[in-house]
Length: 440
Image (cartoon, rainbow, N blue to C red; front, side, top):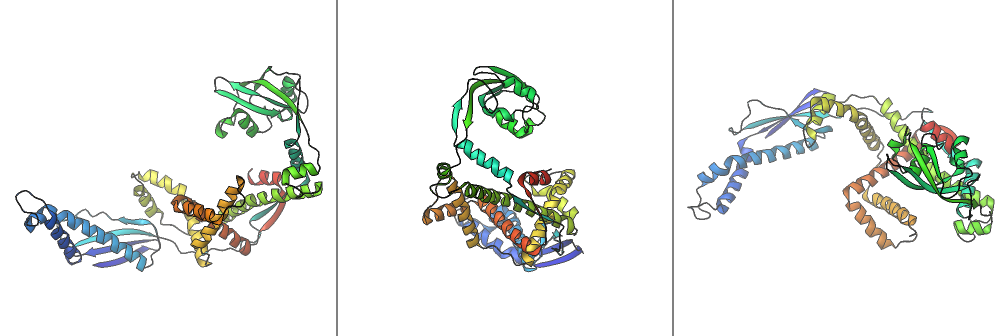
């Protein structure tokens, strides 16, 4: 057997695999001898079928199978031994005059090679790192929300300022029949609010969906309509009032603190606000970190220049799926996936050049932390270690779940690395301004 590589250019190569009869003949003979021993053919005793008959019946198919196995194995070994960093999979080159009636065979494969490039992390002050703070306005709202949650519900006869209204939104054409509780203050505009003020239980209010709330997401929740459908929704609605009440806010005192956080954890309104601030900013940090990782990704993709074997990848995409696709479809698929491929290569380069590794013990510990957080949400704050280990083992035995967690851990490691190596432009703002700036 002989394997050679010919470089077409820096990103493309052709590997030629030459296989002679001596490479596969012994294996074929052994398999045919085994077939002869087991063959059950009328007119012959088992194990006494003439070898000529066995070769005539099975010889060619066995030979083709063994040549293909040898070809695949030797090609894979060659790629590993030569440390060829390829994109996609090798593509066999078609040979018009090829046939299986010979003893010696020659196969050629096209390769798309990964480009060589450097990643520059000297992005001084070009990427914004957001520091999201919980301002006094947010803290005031959260304290009031806690007061409402533990407040006293007082029924009302008619709708007036400051009440909550429970009822059912309906629209027969759209199949809407949704029980909802709304605050009068959340209704947008005086014209709409006037339709509710003075109404009693059992009254039916007619409104339009468009402009009913100041936030489309409130309308989405109130009607039970999907995100895509809610935009520009303009339909008539009826709202049948079933209950009217007002919430008398709970007093901000030790009794409230104990209900929210447990006995004596918080002992003053100042400590309450500090606890709310701490919890809120911890959640904000997660969003800020995700935004930062996205921003670094965008920056590296835009500023790390290298060529790809585009034509090879389009040909590979045309045949890589379960069903072949046309050249036009493959070109479209390449355009959609090119950016992701570029970042995969950049990420791999950063991990390799900076010796950022991930071992199985780290993945187990990371998964254990994830499982503990999940259990805590359901009130299981102190699970036994054996129970945790069993759950982690089950989670990681699921390949899709293990891959997802591994990707999360790699992202976490990369984020820590980027924070250490890149100088960012730091911008402090409240959450509302962050959302407006980042998701505008």
